[in-house]
Image 1: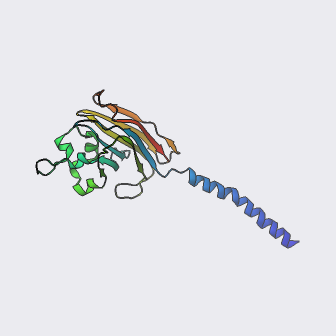
Image 2: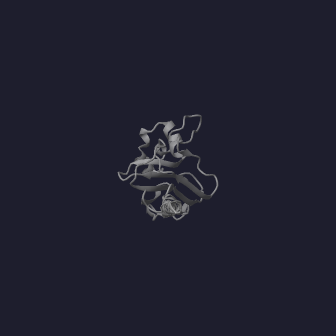
Image 3: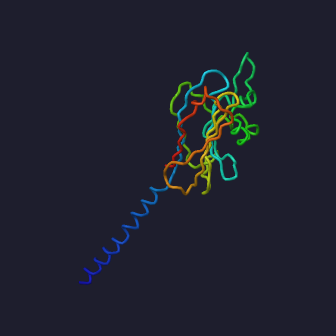
Length: 199
């Protein structure tokens, strides 16, 4: 009889822990582990366009991590055998918000190379992911952050998309707003359908 009672007590205790374990697993599943930025890119004709940057800022407005910036912005283009000059120096209207915020002048070529990529030669969807780490690969502290997408549509026509979120937010879309410096009907479709999703 004592053995039966002992067995029942153990079984009852085990059953009590099942819901707790299930809640723990569910809680881990609900925690967001990445942020995905996507947009439609339509390659534009002629110089002075097709440059963009994607980055994350902290509450102080400091760049935590640049996910991508087009190569002309940071490397420029060599002509006539001369050494290339960074694009944002030759063309100051080239993603100026990113250049100022990241303090590009203080970055050496190796640092800029870490997140510089070729300007897409074909139109189509572009996707970038952030794993909540900084430029050195270290996990960022809990808090509020801002995702930024800047595109130089043409010459001085520049658009910046931004959205604020918290590391404690649940999975789902982030609300995005945009600011345009100068309208340009001809190049307005360079970057469209900007979406940011916590996953």
